[in-house]
Image (cartoon, rainbow, N blue to C red; front, side, top):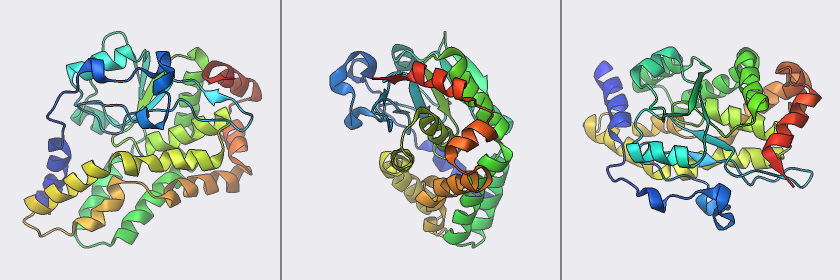
Length: 291
């Protein structure tokens, strides 16, 4: 069993890009309107795989999120020197890490000089490893999905203090910020969702952004599953692990439903559950939106 667990995490560690992407070939959206579109939303990184811009999303009142201000990502423990320079060139001033203490100890972020680093831990890594062990004992993908559905519900019920601190960190200084967890899809995905909702983006567009993880990491997921199958000598049914590596719409919808059930609406969840006042929301929008 533990051999199989080791195989999974070894594969996750091995699947790093072997080629370095030239710094001059990487888009800087803020100063180049021709790059401010969906084609360039995913950022080319050597050592991260789900790093992307949140600029350009339209709000329901006709404004849009400024490019070069908000970025979501997976872990930054394997980034290259060129990646470091790229993050600085993007103008990022602050990195927020949602990973647990154990995750950060095992894979510490590489923080470029001059960028502030804030820790806002949400501890799901132990439960994730326990679930992987159970999966490899023969649980179905349905049970895996149930775990991730429950995790998204917990974001609303158990981690409001973390997400309040996260939004306040954006409101307080309005500086270009990158936030991330391990895979950049669950904890960071919910952070992106509440940020977009607070800025006035429609729920439909928020869900669309959430689901982009599958498109942006498709090749990587297939490579990981292939490596797991090979290294386990084809003894592991890799399909039962697929839900752990990607996202499904029901995950974020479960979080939304939990917030709406308890607070009446997502907007009320932000105001009452996260203690973000109308004045705070106005300040957030003034800093991150453009007409």
